[in-house]
Length: 453
Image (tube, one colour):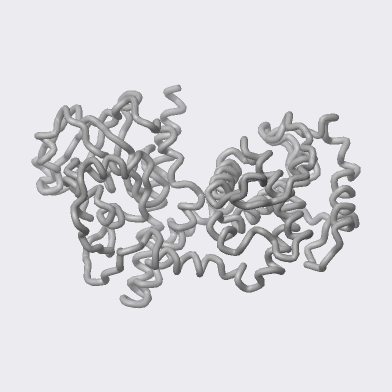
């Protein structure tokens, strides 16, 4: 089977798992329309209440809560507070708080199919933001805050989640007994109505700016964001990237220890070199700008031996066997993991610093038949660090994955521009093939782990 046929079959199977036939339900008169027509505050509230008090209320409990995945949530009393940014008498919705709220809700929707523990904060924010849009001639939330906190993507994913539930026609799933939007708790249905109205208000206020937000984010990514001081170099032949950076002045080891915490994330290894945690963009152990040995695990595979103990395996030439690590056995080093590593600890995208690990054992041998060297490195996670491995595995967050998608598009556009369409197609096919192989490997390991349990 050719690679193109394999990718086509993979894409078809992925769509069959994710796409569910939509229900063609005639909209009820009491629902809020999507025509973008201006309405008065009283009319909006009347429509919301009509939607909430629809005949399907019999499917809900007396406390306003439905069955899984939103069981047991009490109906929220509408907040009377107004939306004020960075003021002590308001709700305290500063940019960082809004970004954390957005990431938390989006991550829960993707992994748990629920809004998660922050759903009450979500409801309070949506009510306050919508009221702010309706009552103020100059709303508090500006374009920069919405862009920074990914609030546009939060609203889109909330409404897409509701559409996915609405499209599910079979209630046979054990984890989702009532899948229609009308079967959701009153509290969450109100949040969905507020999200729909808030998105309509933002689109009306910002017009084309709202729809070009990703283009602006991409420009910020290059100018002063995650790709600052990093440039694309078409002349590089390194298979792990074509990016390079200038080496900055050295900083003390103390400053280095204070700068990096486990969970720090970069778009690529060159961005990590720019910040000084490694001294090279190549996959080899180096002492970074702060004199601490760091090992990036970008390729190869990794198996869990015991809890917090892992064996890293790599095959290649003699120069790829990290001979310098023999002198580091028994010592602590920094470990970075890349998305191309076949490991249950590997990030979904980019490169992540996973904290300190102790090298417990180093082994290297040559296969006389194939003349290929095999490296086996046993690593143990150092206990007592600020973040556990379970917390670190949550990185990258949804907002970071947004930047990753922009970065991949930017890199693809540069390859197409500088090398032509044929090289761009090869690059895209290779990326897709690697993604399929990684997901197959990860699925097999998770299945094996479930059997052991």
